[in-house]
Length: 64
Image (cartoon, rainbow, N blue to C red; front, side, top):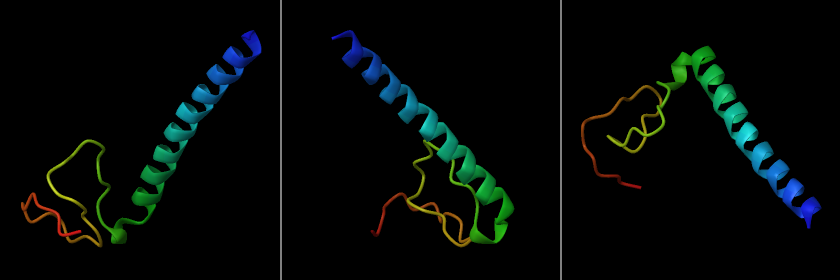
């Protein structure tokens, strides 16, 4: 019973740390490759995707 609890805590902790590491890698990649467009900040819902430096046109609808 206690082993299951410790395993679950370890898995949750590992997933959280993994998410942080992936975000850092993404930020570093975006900083080293500015020609690919701006870094999309988490939580910004103004547009769907700003790819290849196109920027947002202010339209809040997605054509995906």
